[in-house]
Amino acid sequence: MEKSKKTDTSFIASMNDDLLHNILRRLPAKPFAFASCVNRSWNIVCNHILSRPKMVSAFSRNSDQLKAVEEAVDKALSEPIRPDFVIANITCGNMEVTLRLITKRVGSRVPLIVSIVEGVLGKEACNDNAGEVKQNDQGMYFCPTYAILLTIGYFPGIQVDVIPVIQAKEESEATVGDKFVMDIRNFVSAVSDHATPACLMLFGEDTHATEPIIRKLDYAMPAETIIVGDQKGQFLHKRADELRTVQLHKDESRVLAGLIFARDRHRPIQAGRVQFSTAISRGMSSVDLRYKVANAVNSLPRWPATLMTAKRIGEAEVLNGEQILDDIEESLLGNPLWEAGPYIGVIKRRKYSVGLEEKPKIIASLVFHQVTGADEQYLTVKGGGIKTGDHFQVYIPDVKVAEASLSDVSTQLRNIMSKPNKREVVGGFVFAGSGRGDSFFGRPNADSSPFLENFPELRFGGVFCDGEIGRGLLVGEEESSSQGQGCLHVVSSVYLIVSYACS
Image 1 (cartoon, rainbow, N blue to C red):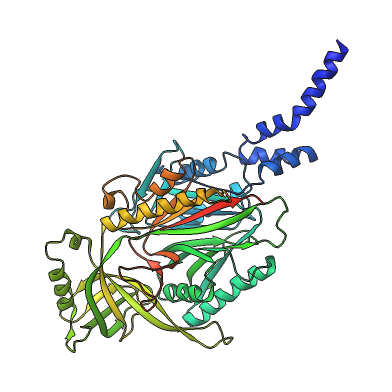
Image 2 (cartoon, rainbow, N blue to C red; image 1 turned 90 degrees about the vertical axis):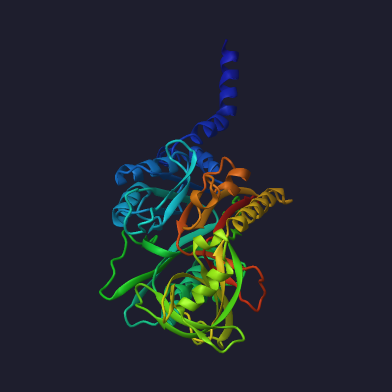
């Protein structure tokens, strides 16, 4: 009998770590955190469970903001995770309340961005079904349908923080852009042996400064740095060393907040390597109409728009807004794509440098502007930064292009799994143009389909935005280096894929 007891005890002891691992991995985040502090043995098991990175998203469409935040947080924290960062995207409501509620749950030392977006997509907290919630046609500032998407990430071997761009009234775009680049470089040099970050996720406000600063960042960062984001919205942020969001001084305005991912010089030996990748689904086709801006007038800084006249390439006649719009309408006569509304793709050749450290270089960027009106004087387009002499071409949203491009993205994601190093996809995020979604494709969850088809269990998330940011991607039907690269897109979906390979 005594021998039998000893055998049972030895068996239980030998199984203890496996049983403990099986129990602890099922705990929600908060009990798991307590369990890791019980003793050294439990801590080792907990660290083993969290040896792999995680990025989980969940959204709630509960009309009660407080309950929606709780539902999304509860779902995201329903399994073991140590938050390295949090992103909360809401369709309307109070950003400060959202930030405060989330900080209470995840702790005051976690970097956090809260932004107002045009809509959210992903998997619902209440049932894990894929879905989306979009703003109605009355725009961002009237939103009867509240929804929140919460994304929490844990990336061992990666240092994460938020770096904002705050512009004083008298500061130039060049000055704040230089400061943003230097702040990023300084953060990376403090925590990493690498000179530049692995990835940047940007959330911007609709100001005159936003676009040129993003284009400067595109110039300043090497090609291997992934840059994605939402160009135009509203945001609040809290850095890792701040207990609460910083209040702005008088005459200051928010421009951008960047979530910076830098490789940690003290990466744990057991930690694998987190890899960031991007893919894009385009959603526009070009029209064979090319112009040169004859005159450009920029509007108020807070609500950027441009009034312009133009000449057809190779012709001397200056066309007013109605004449340009007549050109477009005639070219698309009988084409149902006309109903979606045209855009112009402007080639902006600008000089770029960071501070006084280097000689300025001329870089060509392709930037899209939506046509919003026309009269006997001017064509009106959204956004600023257009100059006399810039060349542009007309583009139209095209669902056939978008469908074909979605298929290409799905193939690209499938190839990640088939690579020899057998990378595991641990997270995904979509920045989809506000013109897309169920109504654009005529079917549900089209923008989510690359993730759903390839990684059905992945708890991905995404937002609909008015200006998608995607790094190093060529846009247009006849792209070439002379046309310029574009990191700013419309009617597209930019996919961030986070994968992992064991060391």
